[in-house]
Length: 88
Image (cartoon, rainbow, N blue to C red; front, top):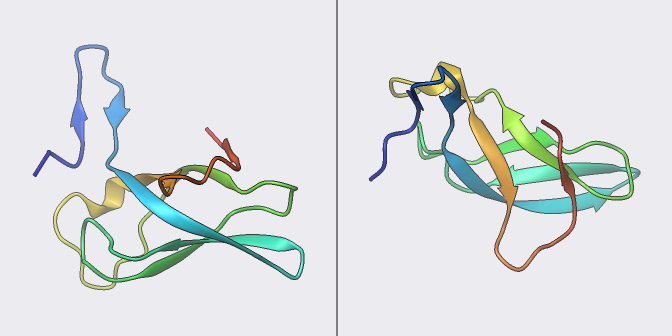
């Protein structure tokens, strides 16, 4: 398993990339993470109200997290889903 995050020589942070499902309901997007890299639980994140979901960095919603959870993760579309844009 890869490291969840690290600082590189330029001191920029890398986050784990996590595939999510996008669901549109009543004018807004939900991004559904089936398995959090920090706690293994399902999480739901907002994806905006535009025509396409907004992916990108989010803070984790873990109740019982492992080390590193406070750094968050980068939400990306599940394979085959080409909708959306990166919010970062």
